[in-house]
Image 1 (tube, rainbow, N blue to C red):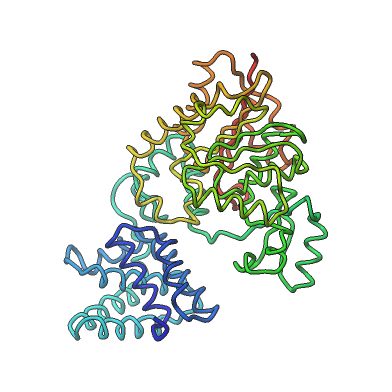
Image 2 (cartoon, one colour):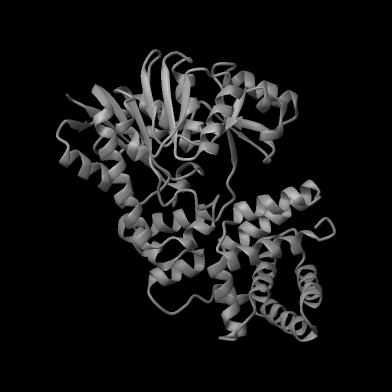
Length: 448
């Protein structure tokens, strides 16, 4: 592994993802843990894998003009995609170098005939740069799908909900690099103090425009730092940091986090409660429960009780009632496509319908565990109304003891208030609003 170059390793990962239908982030992590790579090569492998998957439909459309319906082996098609991605989207890699490297890789993995074909296809594309502008025949949804590399069915759904301009903005944001954000541990420090500490360690960082608890950092090595190990911060997306303030849990309260792993929101709630009260944090898997416990310990939090359970079984556990309940529900994940590009290719409309049904069952099961005058927050990292607004509206209609809490905006950071909808109880952050994850939050209150 150590002898392979960055492009060879990236190609191996792409092949495994396609052949085994596995997740690129898991394959990538496994490979990078074993490979002895420099920081620069680690960055290049990551860029090539995620970028090639992210832009797959665009790359395949361009390739179709030159290979037609020719049956290509998986590794050959991925080599062409990988090389085209470098040529089109990576300015720092000269075109001739990308072609030369592709030909050499083809020779090592195949035979001279394949190498000649790869060379011919790539050089033909270089001679016809206008091919990138040739959109397919068809309606606007088809063209947007190809130009911005998103599944056509998903583009059609977004067009129906958000309109063309916003749909394009979402797609463009999904194709941009995610930035790294960290959450200040308010039990140990403040944002300004942490910024000073990061500057002293020569880490480039700046305050987030979305959350006062969020700091944006350059580079992805925050988890390896001394400040991380000592619990001054944890890693969390800015949009996700809106959930704990929305729950508005006060010191001394009893809180249930029903789908808690890996514990980012749970520990944020504990920090806002000043580490006073009791939080039951539930996850289905024992190793994830352990992860919540480890995160809490690192941050110096003692009020979290991690338990292992299916969230649907929680009403039968004899846990009593809670002042606050958070249901950060399993979802399609369409708000985090920039971080997990496989998502958009692996999900189907049927998946969305199935997950929406589960979300509703979870909401219905947990509702009786909320005390009178208690608050329940429902959140997802998706931008699909079927999983968000429609779930909440159906629940309110069928459960008259619950109402939408119209005061949600009071507890959100100022920047997020503009995205609270007309009900006053729901906020939908789209990926292009703050260059953060797409996220939905609704706040419900129990009357009796």
